[in-house]
Length: 283
Image 1 (cartoon, rainbow, N blue to C red):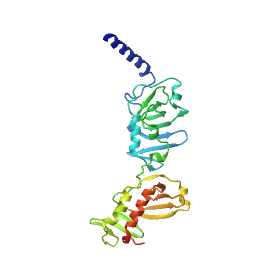
Image 2: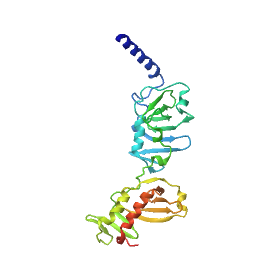
Image 3: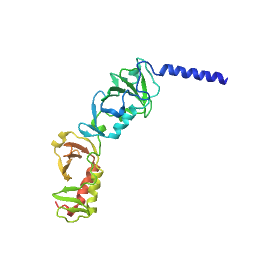
Image 4: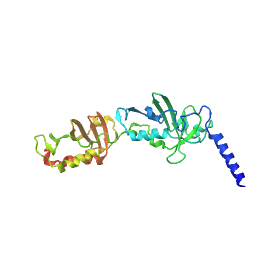
């Protein structure tokens, strides 16, 4: 009886391998989903059919539209694409449409470029949370990768490094016409007068925790907006703008010459930090 069950199990495994095992023309790098080394990928173009975003690598830095993006998020995508996909889920002619990984019907289309070659991947619907169906362009096999398609946005804001304007430990600040410099013994005014570090701490903390929510429409700065704060950090200007009609805040950074959306919470932190200077920075 046991021998018969063992033979039946071996037969079932043989059928699975025959149906879903590697086939001619379906040859990724052994143990990986892509026939590319993900560590060598220099450009990633992501599209959802309506919008797209281009991620580019320069050494260890990833950017999109010239702005820093979340490198850890890019790395998670590349790791997921470089994993061992296991057995194929399906490979019939109708499967790409059913699993949303067809050339004209997909959740995400990802083009990857490196010095060694190019690859295209289609991401489709999800068999379960944390899994996404995927197919390499030109091949029939459909796999389930450890990835959510919503973790692969096709827009700049979805990849943006939201801490790109955060500043920790600045050496100099200018506010309300007053300059403050960090010396060996702490902060001091331009004339050398010491400044109580507790006075500057709220603003320094606000700058260190600063998080933009996205890139804003440049036309927003042309509306009736008020400049709520004008701050220079290590020689670079940062302007906080407020649209009182919509109660929206924007940051314009000289470092990137870009207008960013800012949450009310972060805006209030900056304003409270500026107010905390009080007599140290007379208006």
